[in-house]
Length: 336
Ligand code: GKE
Image 1 (cartoon, rainbow, N blue to C red):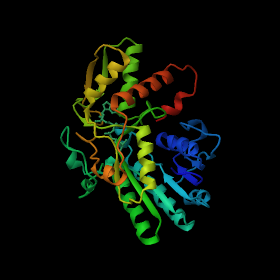
Image 2: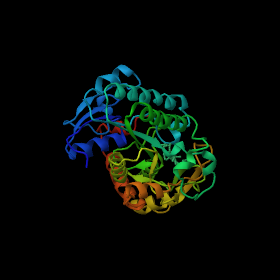
Image 3: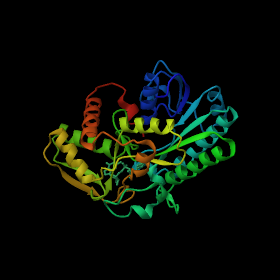
């Protein structure tokens, strides 16, 4: 367990960043949190951490303000979202390279000893994800390089930037490729939401409005795996404490089609089977994606614990409770 350390978490106002602050505070660390979002848009905002709101970490002067004297840095910050966002904001997503690059420069100047970078399954070669129910992607499947346009290229480039800072300057880096992380305190509307939260919202609305149909992007046959946030945080901290510095999958291998995921959510909500309106023109991403967990099991002796139906139950319950709040600032979870 990481304890009694001074830790900077960049992107602390976001989904995974907020959960990471919560866990590291509970484990007994002193946390500096920063995010480009203003205070009212932070997903979780802890009083016992040093919080820097509206702090744009693409600006190196901001990076240098907060790396002084810290032991560890977790870079959880990037301009991103589900396919609806990353397909339509490629230049925005690529600019996240400024965050990682400037942060590494500042960390090197302040001799930070260890650095975590949140990479993504979008770094993987698209041609290996053209069928449904593919075999899990192994770490070497990122090359030859053909990642998701925009966002995926930034992640792959930034992985290499991390490696070269370690080779040339000695900072220890840890890199996780996240496979569609979901759970409470994540975006569920507004354009940045990923499929699990989006479909929980749509099923909840259908139930509330007594609708008999929901809109689904694509033909619903596309497949994915989804990792619940608690497993993501545990895997991330196991990796950080390990001595393994190559990119490694932090994901699930419980591969389902989008139609199958909707069926699970319908069961959770108790609604009758809904008629699916398939929107073939909406952003679809790859045809099939799954995480091969051989390497992460070998180097970390870690695997996920929370099955998709159990994680979706917690997520659906949280989203439905948020959507029933009147007049409360839920917009922080629905900001585009
Ligand atoms: N977002 C969303 N909203 N996706 C939907 C919806 C909907 O209402 N209905 C069906 N889908 C389908 C999408 O068309 C896509 O084929 C699949 O669900 C998953 O979409 P997603 O969760 O938005 O994103 P992807 O898994 O394709 O890609 C994401 O992968 C992550 C890493 O695994 C990226 O957008 C990043 O969030 C990240 O790299």
